[in-house]
Image (cartoon, rainbow, N blue to C red):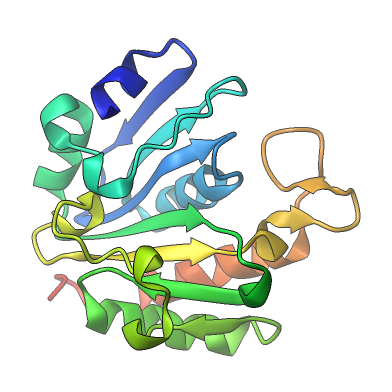
Amino acid sequence: MFKDLLADPGVTEVLDLRSSFGIMAFHGGHLEKVTDLIADEVAEATNSSYYGVIHGEEVTTHVPSKLVDPAHSSSLAAFIDHVDVAVAIHGYGRESLRRVLLLGGSHRRLAAHLSQQFASDLPDYESRDDLGNIPPELRGVHPDNPVNRARFGGVQIELPPTLRWNWNDKNWSDHGEAGRAPQVDQFIASFKTAISTWPQPNP
């Protein structure tokens, strides 16, 4: 499935190798809106490595994370080989979790570090890093999930639409005509702070 997705002319891969801290958005573009914008901007600002898969407007295929296989992408393979830890930005929608950030993945210490920063900087949102309080299908702990293939593992962050939507312009805070929602800027600033205070080299 991932190989077929990458062959679609409406899909673009992006790879920028920088430091050993990696940020991913492989459901980016029109699939899980604003995730690639956040990941790319934070990566550039913090000198982190970045891998993204940008889905065009007509591309609706959602490849499950565990099937995003580096065997089918030299860019993804290079990213995984280069980074020590990774954070993947995703979007999700649950009516009962409208203002909840979910932090799954295999690197639980990094998840707790990020969650603490988000809780401090985003008072209108709850940040959950207890896997027991995250729906099983959103925990991101499968070993084949590319965020967990980094040398020391990684964190999967699921962002609700309330954070990614611009309520003033009634549109997504992405690359279109809508302006940037203030909560997107708050999240980006908080994410950058969390990375800057994470110990290097990454344990």
